[in-house]
Image 1 (cartoon, rainbow, N blue to C red):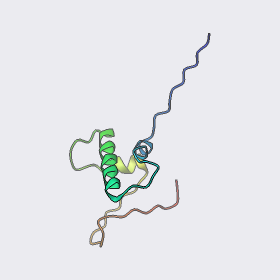
Image 2 (cartoon, rainbow, N blue to C red):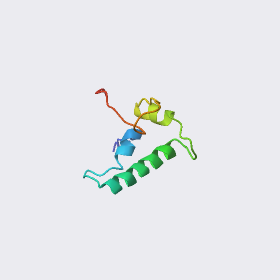
Image 3 (cartoon, rainbow, N blue to C red):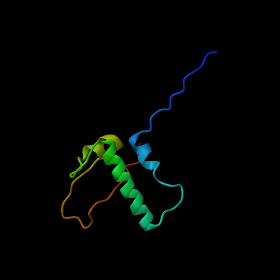
Image 4 (cartoon, rainbow, N blue to C red):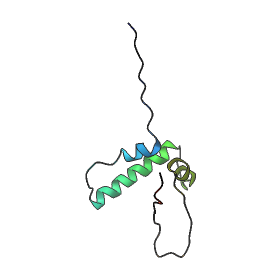
Amino acid sequence: MNQTEHTATPLSVLQQLRSLLPAWALTHVEALQRIELQATRLTRLHGVTSAPVPDEIVTEALRIRIVHKWNLPVSGSAHWDGTD
């Protein structure tokens, strides 16, 4: 009898973070809780145990570019450029 071994492809960092979100809409409080859960998972995956969190764990793993700008009316924003 010949057995074929099946190994699962490990999930990417982004897939692991997305897997923490349900398929249904979240309340504001629930969304904040899930964001905290995702942040904790991301830092644990990269062995980060204290602040500051290096930009590279976000930029390298998630194909995100961080641009630091000062004197803006918001603390941060995200924009998708339509690629990937």
